[in-house]
Image 1 (cartoon, rainbow, N blue to C red):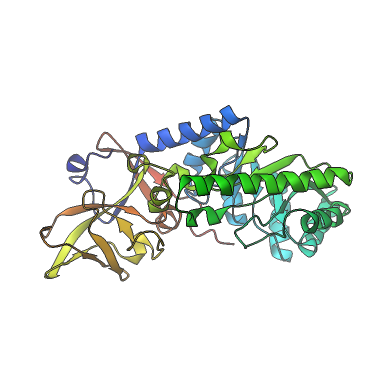
Image 2: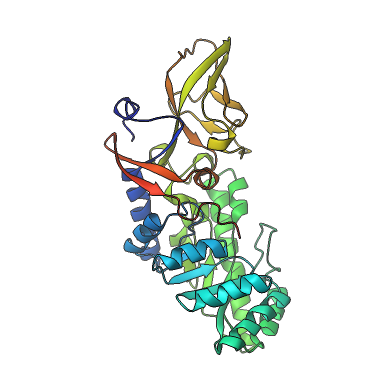
Length: 369
């Protein structure tokens, strides 16, 4: 846990702080869980967007990394990370040109749920004289990308597999809907459903003469149940486990002490009874909400205090009667969503034993294309 009394003497707020001991524990625990289950860990770096953290994940045993956008892949490949899953459709001439350059310096696997998108990637592969590895995205409940498991996905895979410049090497899904579940039992059911949906589709493809090597599942809540998945899952892609946030707390995925990211803010206003104003607003905490808990973050020392409203540079706290704050007090907040907080900042402050040990550069900040 962060020793606030020592730390606040060195901070200029608002400050986004990473407890390095908690971070190390999260990296180690998830890597060990993957190893025990015989599933490769390919973490999603959109949470931290940091070359340093990505390399720590590889040191702990990750087989490679996952990124959301080409810009993130370019940052990671330039730093020497050479096994990257690009878990986002690549559409358009300019992006295909950038992908072609990336393929010259790293092993890149792409993904799609669309034949037309796959055609563009195939044409690139033909021009480069290679077959580009490709995962086909499957909808297992989130309702974002992906056709339905079984025949709809198998039919698509058959069509894509006939293209000369790609090789379908995997099926993938993202069970982000697990965040809407209220108990560990419900999240376990989501984890088993996403895995079984991909395995059933893989078997159908096998019957059609198509061998798909990788079965890739993803989300931090479901990764907790890697040991309970049916045999055949080869890879998992959690992201938020590195830092933790309110979303992990309300789904019982992580304990409060495991949440490595904390936002420190100073009380700058006491305008009326029951209202406290801090110097952290939407440009620090983000406006992401959580359906299971009111407000824009949790104050561990004052769980009844609600981060009620954010403007750009101000945060309004609603304070219950009997709770007192003073001008200059520093409060500690666990944000609702660590991934979006990361992307708002150039660097995060890495702390150990109450002292600043290093700054964590957000190398992929703003890499949204």
